[in-house]
Length: 234
Length: 284
Image 1: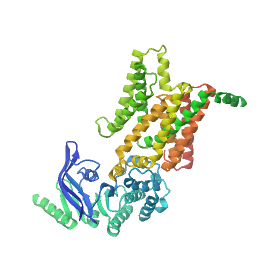
Image 2: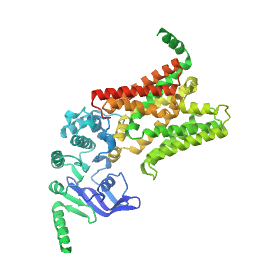
Image 3: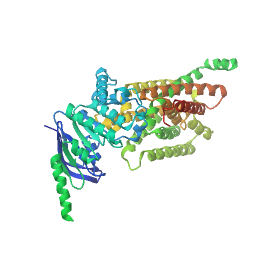
Image 4: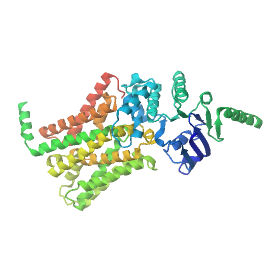
């Protein structure tokens, strides 16, 4: 049951093409890691899937009655957010807004959902704290809780462990893994760390000069092949 | 001391003073509400740019010979606000440069037009009062007062109804967009409301000092408070108190209204900074 099918995607800005011919699909419950060098277009791909920018060509289809409103997103942090005066509660509950259309205020269900998301992320005790005073790992949990308010189906994460120390990074990976395994949330994650990607993910999308999409077992073979190929060239 | 109060009581019986106080409080309230959003979105200068656009528009209205220039000024400023926010995202000329260009451009064109076509005998006085507000708040017509009341009610209603969405778009526009919120629409509405606020506040402090009215209360509140809601409420209260203090001071001491209010805002900012330092929580 594919949730997301991308066919022949070309990505880029204006006339500048970064990637072309990308095809992959994501099934419900998959854990897809997108890896590749800096500048290969990982974030651009994610923004295109999210509908923040148009693909130069190709199609993106959501199925199973999934719409853009069922997507949760954990963006890279921006400068604006680092000194934003907002409480954790305010940020988490703002994840509910996508579903609400024009209705102006939060209702009981929204508040309960925000409460549950904060519980799931173990940040209930930070509820009243100011976002900018939290540690990097705590901030990521807050944003993850907000993404959970937006959806329980599919989460797109853009380098969720960037700038975190090793201990917090490990916790974050465990948390995301448990969302995938225990709650059945589909995960699409951009990662720098290929080893961690191979450990947790079910599928790998490698973009760069050479593109690859498949299960992680297939990716291991692909990488071995690539290494062998390089050896042959020597 | 009793002297001051009796003078004050004397002035407060005058309808033009009461009008000025009503308009002053409303404008202070409106400008502070969106100030928080503007400061956080790094759009502090948009207020400055738009107020210069409004100055240019007023010059055009004066040249064309309109007796009531509010609708024309409002229309031009709203269009420019929309252009600036739209351009900000994807044009070759980036946000801050575009604002600087439009702002200086309309200031120059406005002054040029006034110079070439003005029939007034006291041109520099006219320009000065448009830029610094001078005493025009004490000469409001009842039409001005009603216009201001109506626009203020609209702004406050907009802010209350869209409060959560404004928060979301300000905090993280990409997330809002990705999860199906109509971020561009909200940005557009914010731009229009800012333009309305600026045109209305021109009467109070003049076009040069509007930014102060928009930015200072928000910055003061951000020194001390830590949630979006408390910052917003505090900014509104600070702004109203500063405007009232400034207005009454200027009436009693005969100082220019606009600059007195801004001076009070600056004092408030310093006080809040000190409180923030003492509490130790807020980062400078």
